[in-house]
Image (cartoon, rainbow, N blue to C red; front, side, top):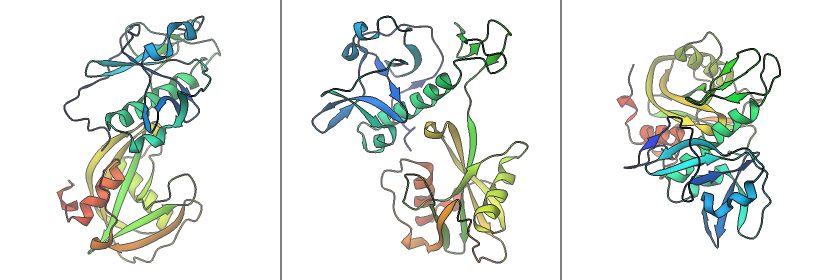
Amino acid sequence: MFQNIGDLEYKLQYRNDRPKADDYLLIFKNEKVLTICDGEKISLPFFSDIGQEKLSGLPDPLFLFSISEKSFFLSMASFEEGERFQFKSIRLFRNISPGWMAFAAATGYHLYKWYKNNVYCGACGTPMSHKENERALFCTHCGNIVYPCIAPVIIVGITKDDEILLTRYAAGYYRRYALVAGFVEIGENLEDAVRREIMEEVGLNVKNIRYYDSQPWGYSQSVLAGFFAEADGDTQIILDENELSEAVWVKREDVPLDEKEFSLTGKMMNAFRNGEEKNSRK
């Protein structure tokens, strides 16, 4: 999965630092990130590529995290595209090399959304300030403190004998096969969310729910928890057409292979195809 960055080390502790010339600078516009395009090669810009003069008069870039010796900073500046600089969809980074760049772009986007959505205090409307010793925003007027938000999401591989239920979303950009998934609601534990989402989307009861693996997913500011579960009783699908366009039982050998295993969904589909889903834990 994209957060597995090999021998590189991800360090998320906040530091009140200023960027150096060879640190990365992330600038977002909606769901796109500024990139440097050199022919077919696409990469994230260094601070020196942007230049201090283009950021003059703007708030200092915010430290996000570091990957090994390289730090990543966020600028909320507006930036005009040119021949060399182009905004690209953060989802394009599924195909970017090296792979850790996709993790950096998605994680940076997660923090960008949090900063963008918390410019003003949600309690009194006063502009928020950044704490110097931790990643938190605070209100100097009413004392409200806001920390980064992470939404829990469940993903479920529903199985019956040697088949797994694969789905396609009814909306959005992703059109390949996926698994039943959804956000955890207030007051639910993860297993209850598994049962509810399955009943709502495909009308099935399940048993033997087993945790498999997890993944940060900055694209939706969430963390994914993957489970396998066995269909219990009637396996006729009642499709929620507002959420899904298709849900079909697929034999183990016919499950599409995800060679890159970019996502937890791909890893779980591969695991079932290879007969490894029983490695999950109750």
